[in-house]
Image (tube, rainbow, N blue to C red; front, side):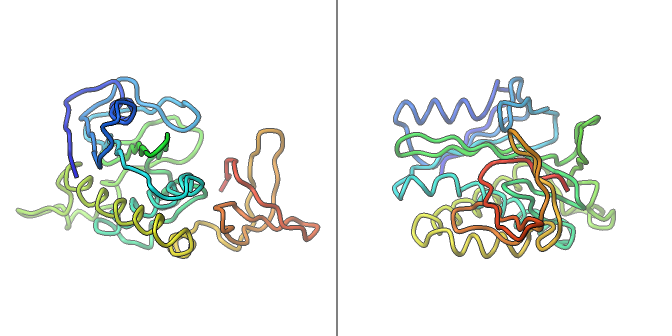
Length: 242
């Protein structure tokens, strides 16, 4: 595993994509103290403030390419597992498809991009700050670490570097599981942390808004919603409103 560190870049995701397109495809992580052109899902701007984590990983892909989109569940799980070392695990949940929530508020973003034989993973995590004036609740990691855990010579939180080291380990292990054993073990672990499982939720789709009971996660990663008329709706893309 290779790690590259920068003070400032336009986008860590663009760097790893350039490596992939130049056929320099080996496990590599790029981290920057700040980004000037960070982006999230659907090309949304990602606010980049000093003290938070901005990183992107490049991984070779040798398995069935149809499994690649399911890597988003691997990454969300890895973030959850990493944060469990810092805060009460009860606070952490996963919102379909790849949002990590702490105390019900979003704490980061995940962006996957892929090409033939490779996968890139962009991650932005709010560690010391979170953006204001968002249309949904947001938070940051330090807000949930007890003061006692930050006291003394060895505080539990020591910055972004150790978090990336732990996170990259979990992601590497999860991608290996996905490519060799399929989605089933990832699905089971994700459902054990799923937000609002078995409850009524609303999902915004491109052309409609639907409400139903979040029943489970399909074998293809689809959110399965039981509607009022009893039918089961499989949703592959949408925004869940909690």
